Length: 45
Image (cartoon, rainbow, N blue to C red; front, side, top):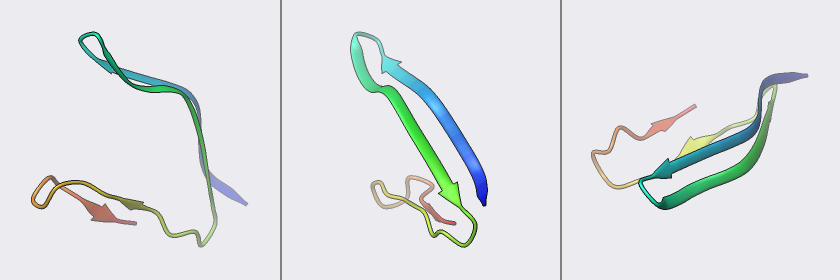
């Protein structure tokens, strides 16, 4: 069972394109981690 689905995500900072056409599906009971620098509001879901 899909609990989160995202399609065609785009993100830029000025002229720097960070994400382009990203697709993500999270299934029930999946574990997802957003990773970044220490203290940058990282979370484990």
